[in-house]
Length: 189
Ligand code: ITT
Image (cartoon, rainbow, N blue to C red):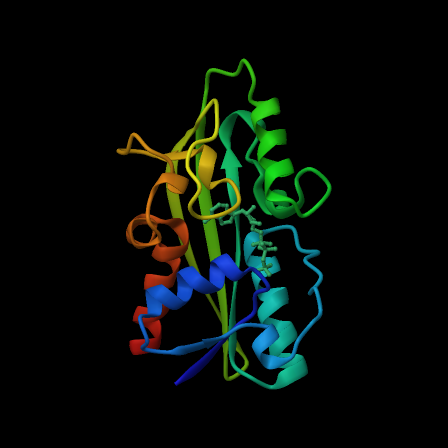
């Protein structure tokens, strides 16, 4: 079966495609001919994820899920949070990561977590699935896999960053993988 994933982020599409392991064919926004950058004006991950899934249901009449995610840093009052994609003012992973490191200079508390909320709309009903992974913010970036803040996030229990892991490894433990596992269990239910 086909599932629409309301995202423009090719890294998310790759991770989720690999997690679904051929059980579903995942179509992203460009696959359904949607070129809109869907406005994310909500105050929470859940609201923003649902704005994205709702947009597709309203404009394309297709059941759909969306992922809103981000990095929450304890010492920065959980910033960048829902502003993760544009923390520096622009959608640039390098600039955003640099700003985080700058704000974290001299701060001893490096605790952080990644969070994903997935919003599924099926038969016009909304279902939410959440995944969280805890870790620490590195002083300097390491690794070139993944995307976003992966080079500065070291998950608890590991001595390397998300960007130093293969996608398969990240997919065993990540916030997105945990949320997706809940979605998959629900779909099978
Ligand atoms: P869509 O809205 O089109 O799905 P996006 O990149 O704008 O794509 P979000 O609004 O959910 O997605 O913003 C998520 C940002 O949080 C993302 O751009 C990264 O900066 C960061 N992020 C989320 N998941 C991440 C991960 O697994 N690894 C590293 N950074 C991540």
